[in-house]
Length: 105
Ligand code: FES
Image 1 (cartoon, rainbow, N blue to C red):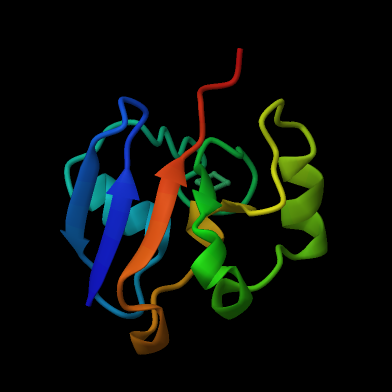
Image 2: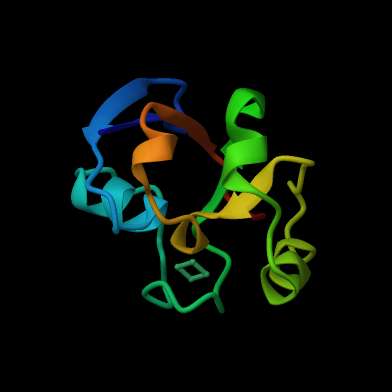
């Protein structure tokens, strides 16, 4: 499976995406360093913010309540915002496209 990531400079990266890993882990382990992922994936830092491509948002689903509260602390929240550490790759998400959200100011 594959995850397609657009970085903050607008460059696209096609990363190998093993099911069972999260979008945050796949981006981090794929060599991109734009996601700080300060909390290591425990849904408490919000530095793994991504925008999910609209074509995939139904399959990815909405954030949980706690995740949504964290996303509210971002100046860049959109309809399609999710925390990358809270999206687990599955076969159904093959080809998922996400854009790394801008850094918080
Ligand atoms: Fe901290 Fe996702 S890595 S909330």
